[in-house]
Each structure stands twice: as C-alpha cells, then as structure tokens.
Image (cartoon, rainbow, N blue to C red; front, side, top):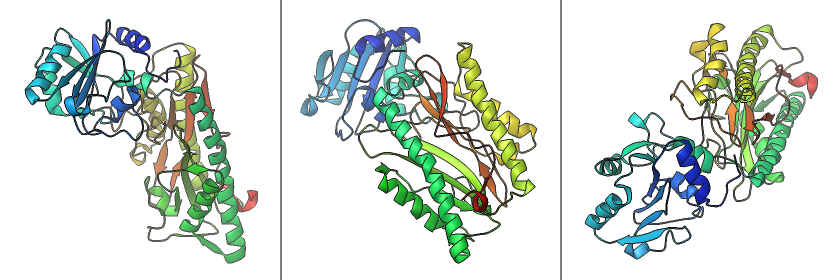
Length: 401
C-alpha cells in the first residue's frame, strides 16, 4: 500500500474500485465529521458553520457543494464547485452529485453498529438514499486514508513508545523508594511522578495515567485517587496504564499497561491470572502474524476472538469486560480498525501501516490484570510489537527496583 498523506485523488479512486464503490460522499456540518476533515486534509483548527459535501467518483472529476458564504472551504481540492444558498439548492445539489451512483461510501454504520465511523446523521442518510444510492460504510477507506501512519508519524510513535516504556521504570522505582522511606505511597503521587516524566520528555496526553492498587485495578477505567483505599503498601498489587505522544502536530500515541507486586516474591494467585492474560495477549499477536504471513484478510473481530478465547477457556470470560484493543493514531482511541467482537462486530480489515493495541484483562473484585501492547503493521505486512519487550511476569517491585 503506497504511503498517503496529502490528498491523492488517484489513490482514493483506486481504493474505491478495490472495495467496489461507485463513489465516496464526504459530508460535514460544524465539525460533525472529523473523519471527512482528515481525509480532505483540512487543518486541525478548521472551523465552519455551514454544510459542505465533496463527492469522489470511482472515475472522473470530484464535485464540491459549498455554501455561498463559505464558498472557499474546499478550494484546495480538485473538482468542480457548486454553491448553494437555499436548502432547496442544497438538496438538489446533492442529487446532482450522486444520482446514478449505486454503491456509495459514507461515514455511516448500519444500526450504528460501529459508532467510530458513524458520523453522518440519519436525516442526511435518508436524503442521499432518496436519490437511489445504496449507502455502505466507508470504514475500510477511513482506515487507509486517515488511520495509516506516515514515516514521520511512525517515528513519533516509536519515540513515545520508548519513553512510555521507560515511564514504568520511573513508576516502579518511585513506589519502591517511597515504601522504603515512608512505608506507603498514594496512587496520585505515582501518577504525578509519571506525568513529570512525560513533561520532562516533551510528551503530552489527554488524560493522566491510571494507577490502581488492589481492587482499584479491577476497574478497567478506574479514576486514580477515587477508590475506597488508594494507599499503596508492601504486599499490594498495582496496575499502571499510561499513554502519551510527542507534543507536536500530527504526533501519534503509545499506550501500554503493566502490573507489579510490591514485594520480592509474587504470590501464586497473581501469577496465575497474569499468565492467563499474557497467553491471551500472545494468542492475539500470533493471530495477526499468521494472517499477514499467509496474506489473508484479517478483520478486527477475529483477533478479539483469538484473544478472548484463551481467557474464556480458562474460565474467566465474564471477567474480561471490554474489547481486546483499539486503533491508535493522533488520538489514543483512533479511527481505524478496532480489535473487537464484544462491544461491536468489527468487520473492517487490519491494514498495512496501521497501529493498534492488544490489551486483554481479567478484572476480579480483589485486583485486576491487564497486559497492553502496541502493534504496528509495516507496509510489507511485517508485524511489530512496539514499546519494549513483552511483560512476561508480574514485576517484583521491591526486588527489581
């Protein structure tokens, strides 16, 4: 797959033919469709107040439909421009664009089965359908033209992943030092130490990391410092989930989760659960590697099944209460293919030059284990796990730091 960053009409039209679309209709109203904005190479601070549409046929010249008072919004793109003022002119203009286009891609998902790509409102879908179009999800197109990484973005991910990997060493050492000096440490203090590490290394994040001790780690989206007991002491089990990216435009996130025991020898109950989670993680990675080695199409749901199947077979399926992973890009939860057959049935394909997480977990009332890694598919189909070596055992915090 060629690298695509700037708007490349020929590449888009080739993809439309690959996925058997007659055209792609990109629609936005007041920022309602960030996916369309990304594909159309609109700036991150883009603001508009009127509806606009851009129609890309599988063959031929694109067409623009813009409001008269914001008529330059798509001037950087190829194609003939039509301006509307009245709503009747808008509807007629859409009809002129798409009439005769049978299989049409839009940011739409049947029954809202995949809300990550469902960005076009129901009324607009009804209007476009009234012109005889069979509207189908543009999800695979989005994965190609919004979720694939440029060389620069991949480099930014590598840099973030290296520093996120190092952040665990910062966290474990801080815990060990505080336990030895004071006998305990608060979750929030560990969180602050990680955030200081990010700041010192020019990383940014939309939300501070999760630090959860014992039962708090059993809540997948725990808010650090808000549990009934937030003090970390010797003999406790700690989950740390952290994510960050370089503080510059276009940078891509890294997102990793690891667990540690505040002691010198890890009790069997923690090791047993960790080993099941790690086996599920590794089964997911193996599923991806095997599919790409065999040049077989791989939808996201299959990787979720491979991972989840290990945990279900061990008898802990009910305690794995979220999807296996998510796309990752300029947002932590990106716009490409997710690793999911639980919350959604993810039929989009995992494509070259995309990045995603594999992060199974088992969440018990007393503690939770999650093992999260980042996976990148190179252009040639090589599968790379980034962010340092896979965690193979629970960290023995007081023995190793």
